Length: 242
Length: 121
Image (cartoon, rainbow over all chains, first blue to last red; front, side):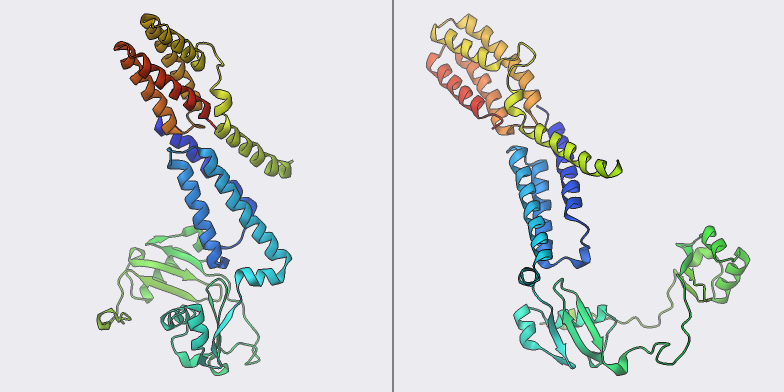
């Protein structure tokens, strides 16, 4: 009896079973998973891990468990696709946590959603001032959708009656101190031009540059390894907590 | 053809997995000769009942050899603890045969028979 061999064979079984089962379940994005989906994923992963290393019991019951949980997820997916009502019941509904600029404390309490979570997710959305928010909706997957007040919404070319210009995709020219020559050729630039650009931004060599990108509209971004910050902003309030 | 592969390859793979996990019941049966554990265990039981200790010792040796072969085949599909227990019982039986403890040997053999019945289920 060889434990190593058995664990290896069981690993192969668990790994490829998981691969096949998850492929069968479809391509739901991780960012779209609800809290329950996470729990399901963790449980299925845990069963697969036990199947691999728990030699005190046979592999078969664990594998049946794995199959059963996958089947339940499959059934749940099928039900939520077929019935909108059941989908709402199982996945829950989005909840408005800020309405017309006012925080809905009761809703937040019901959801066990803290003010800290709200400010955190607002910052994640690029909102650092609560006054800017008209509506904030907590989606079923835990993400926050934010609608800013009209005054704080960015002006679009349409608002100004300007013809929109395409920015194109930013191409990396220097990454981690190394020049990506194929990208340089792609944007019809040469080393001489790149060296002139980095000197313009105060760098002596490409080795000093962490990231440099170029967009077809001529926009050039550069960031060096050394950061010139006179005073760093500290957002931690840990020391003030009692 | 590509589409069929997408369906059939996983089905075949899953089929192989299911067989490897449930094959214990089939693989514990004698397949190659000199690997009939249950036959040797029954013969050992008879020898012990008749108090033919020399023959019993020889039969135990053959049972252990057969078990060695079978345990390799069923190690993926069977419970590790049950397999270890059978191996340990064989060791204990050896000791009881040496001291000619008929009752103890017969009790241990009964346990082997029970475990053998459960193995791979």
